Every structure is written in structure tokens, then in C-alpha cells.
View 1 (cartoon, rainbow, N blue to C red):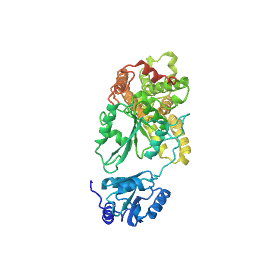
View 2 (view 1 turned 60 degrees about the horizontal axis):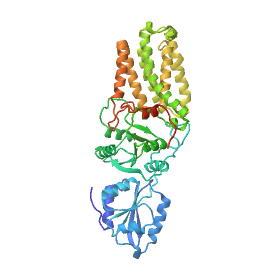
View 3 (view 1 turned 90 degrees about the horizontal axis):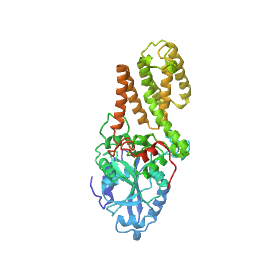
View 4 (view 1 turned 45 degrees about the horizontal axis):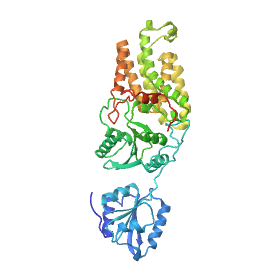
Length: 468
């Protein structure tokens, strides 16, 4: 819509009233005012307006004398209005976008442009530490659903003129704001141009799922590979560190998470605690996370393989043999428990906080002692699955945790069906899914392992001392 404004106030207000459906929308408000002896009016969204600021601006407009009014709205915005964020808008589409984003729009009779007063105040929660992305040390603030506050949290940490925050819009109806954050002298320019091109080419009605919708729009290939292409974080310090390393951080309005690109599997496994502790402790935490990730993938398929081939079990591991009667095949016990654990996780999310403790106790008793006594599950199976369920939470990335879960399920099925050859095929399939994956930039998903860079590989596995 490239329609221009008229210089007559009545024509502009009648057109806007029609477009905005003012009689129906109670939260879109039009208020008539006078300034400099002329009729004027303001449009704003109830709930987005900083009332104390607006009161002072209205007091100024009421006191303005006719001789103090300039010839054009552009001069009015640039030299007369005593406020910082002021703009003059001539295009109706631009005005509607700004108004529906929360900008107060002032129309004055005789001006063929609207004066935008950005005195927005979005409803928001406090910048408390994220409930999921926690750290034992370090900052305790987190991103919120308001885009401007999220960019401010990053600016607070990177006080450099090289930091750029470029805003774009996607979604024909939602017109969701998207910000690309990067360091000018460190960013991959080819990736930046490609990302901007992909975002500009998005043809969807709205980003209904925020960053997930954006991720699916800008990277459409290989949907069947479960390993994540993006790293998500709610921590401003993690996002700032990624920007300083030359990555691009994508912020989406109404989402409390930042999306980091490009991302390899080593980037996803890293956490903030690796850097908030001394090098020895940070290295131990990082290596532990790598080892536990491998164990969660292989523990239950390996046990199933040994159960199917008891003569392979050495004497010093003879205690792992199931001693009780197996009423249900072991592979089905593992598969049922995998599903039951996800069911409990979903139930925990939807359980009111006041009921979470008693229901956890009941679930623990029922799925623990009673299921073993009734013969549905064997105690050894329950123990291994309990370790896997808890160890999955060592990964802060839900996407990586579920990718390992899907690979583990495939390994279990293949091992049950084809014994050793199925076990080997499952491991090869998992390695192929990881090695054959690519980052959004089209580079290796396992860099610096391939192509090999020993210096960077050492830094991925060990927490090195900070150098200049």
C-alpha cells in the first residue's frame, strides 16, 4: 500500500478510521487535540503507550502558538517537537506498521505527513535468569520477549562501534521484527548476505512459532536429519560471546531466545559454565558432557546387544546379567520406557506447581517399585533408562538431546533386529548423520575435526586460559 496522506485532517482520519475499524477495536484510540491554533489528533494502541511521557508532550502541543508551527511536518519533527525518537511519515503503509507496533501517530491539519512519536512501553517481564539456560556462576539476567530490551542487553556487553544491529521484517500479516547482530570486521560477509537474502525472500503470512518458524524458512533442506543447525540461548552473555567470535545472532520480536549461526556440534555442546570456572574445572565439565552424551547414545543399545549375546560378557561384568524372569522382550521394555519418560516430561510441564511434588512422588513409586514387582519391567532396565533420562539434561540444547534420542531408538531397533550387524549399522548411520550434516553457512558440522585444525580442536575439548 503506497497511498500518500492528504493535507486535510478530516480526509486522513476518515481513511484511517475505515482501515483500522475503529468502531470495533476498543484498544485503538483516537484523541482529538489542538496545537498552534490547528485541529489535530493522535492515534495510539492502548497498553503500548508510556502515559507520563505522552502527558508532557500533549502539554507542549497545547501551548504551541500558531507562529511557532513550521511549514512542513518534517521540520516539525526535526526542530520543534522536544522528544528524541520523532519521525515524519508520508506513506500510509509505513504509518500503519508503526502505529500497530505501538508508535503514537500525530496528525495536524495542513500537514501531508504524520509525526511519529515513539514513546512505547511494551508489557514485559523482568530480565531474570532463564529457568532452562542456567549457570552456576556469571550473569543472572536473561532475554525477554521485548526486542529493544534484548538488543540493549547485548549493547551493554559489547561497547564497540563495530557492533551492528540490522533490523528486518518478515510475515505479511504479523510483520515480525528480526534483528541481525554481528561484528562488522569479524562476520562472514558471504553468510550475512545470504541470510539477509533468505529473510527478505520469506513468503509466509506470519512467524507463528517465532524463531522455529524463521529457522524453517531460512533453512529448508534435510529436514530428516535431527541434529540441530542452530544454537538457541536465553543468555545475553552467551549471545555476546558468539558475536565476538564472528558469529551472527538473530533476535526475533516476542521471543526470549537468541539464535546463533553458524553452529557446529561442538558449539552446541558448549555451555556458559565452561568459561565461568577455572580452565581445569571448565575442561572437566566440557569433557564430561562429551562423554555423557556418548554414553546416553550407546548405553541401552550396548546392554541389549550383550543381553542377546550373553557369552560375550566377560566374567568381571557378569553382574549385569538380568537375574529375574523377563516377561516382556528387553527391546520393548526400552522402547516403552523411552515413550513413558517423554510422557512424564510433558506431564511435568503441564502440572500446576502446587501439585508437582506429590505427583512426582506418585509417578516415582508407580514407575519404580510397582512396575518391577508386577513384572512389566526388570530392575536393570529401569536403572539404565533412569540414567539415560537424567543424563539427557546435561545438554542444554533440547534439539541435540532429542537428536541423540532418535539415534538411540534407531540403534535399539536395529540391534534387536540384526544383532551385531544392526548395532554396527546404527553407529554408522549416526556418524553419517553427524558428519554429513552441514551448518547454515554450508561448512562442516564437525569442524575443527574435519577439516582438521589441531589448535581449534584443542580449544573445543579443553578450556584454555584467556589471552589477549
